[in-house]
Length: 301
Ligand code: 13P
Ligand code: SF4
View 1 (cartoon, rainbow, N blue to C red):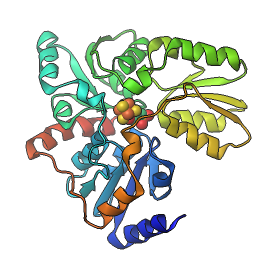
View 2 (view 1 turned 45 degrees about the vertical axis):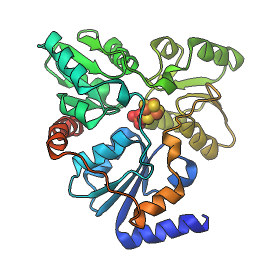
View 3 (view 1 turned 90 degrees about the horizontal axis):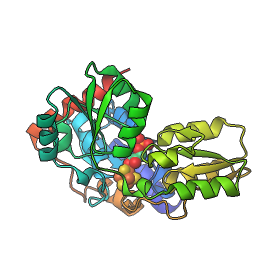
C-alpha cells in the first residue's frame, strides 16, 4: 500500500466511513475499499450500512441507489461526473409513454438508470437478479428498460412472458461483436468464454457461461479450465489475472473499458473523506418513489 492509500484507510476508520467499489473500479481504489461487489451486492451493502458515511466508488446510479436505500447516511460519489451512458438513454417521459401503450404490463427497470426513471418503474433489477425478478411478477407482459440486451437474455430464459424491450444498451458491452467472440474461440479452442448479459444476443450464443460480474468471477474461480476469455469490462479481467497468475486469462476485446468507471481516483476518495466533496442529494419526492422499486428488488429472494 502506498502513502495515499494508508492515509485513506486511516481517515476512513477515524470518520466511520464505508468505502464500496464496483469490480470495474481501478485496482488501487479497490484496494482501499471495505467491499468490492457487483451492482446487486453494492445495493444490499449500502442498504444495511451502519457507518455514517458511504463512499460509493462507481458511477452515479450506484451512489443514487445507495442514497435511496439508506437516505439517513451521507453518500458520496467520488468522481461527480462518472455517469452511465446507458442510464442516459431513457427518460421518465419515455417510461410513461410505454406504460400508456401497454397498460397491463409491469415495468422492470435495470438499476443502470436514473432515480427519476426508477421512480416511474414498478421494480428494479440487476444483471444477477433480472431473471428472478421477472419470474416473481404475476404479469405476463413486462416492459423491460433500458437494456435491450439484458432484456432479450431474460426473454429467452422465460419464454412464457411477453417481454417488451426498449432500445437502450451499454455502449461498452454492446461494442463486442459476434466476430470478436468467434475469432477468440477459434484462436483458443480450449478456452472457456464468460460473458456479461449486457453483450449482444449473438455474442451470448458463443458463451460457455453468462453472468453478472460477480457471477463471472465466481465461475472463473471454480472452473478447472486453464484458459479463460473474459467477456466483460477489463476490471474483472484485471482481478482474475492478479488472482490466477498460472492461468491464461484473456479479454475478449482489447479496448473493453468503461471510461466512466475509471474516473475515480484515490485523490477523489480522499477528498470525500476530508469533506471537500459535496454529498449526493436527490429531491425527496423522487427519492421516495424510486425507493419502492429498489426495495422491492432487494426483497425478492
Ligand atoms: P453488474 O455489476 O450487475 O454485473 O453490472 C455490470 C455493469 O455494467 C455495471 O455498470
Ligand atoms: Fe454503464 Fe456500461 Fe459503464 Fe456499466 S459498463 S457503467 S452499463 S456504460
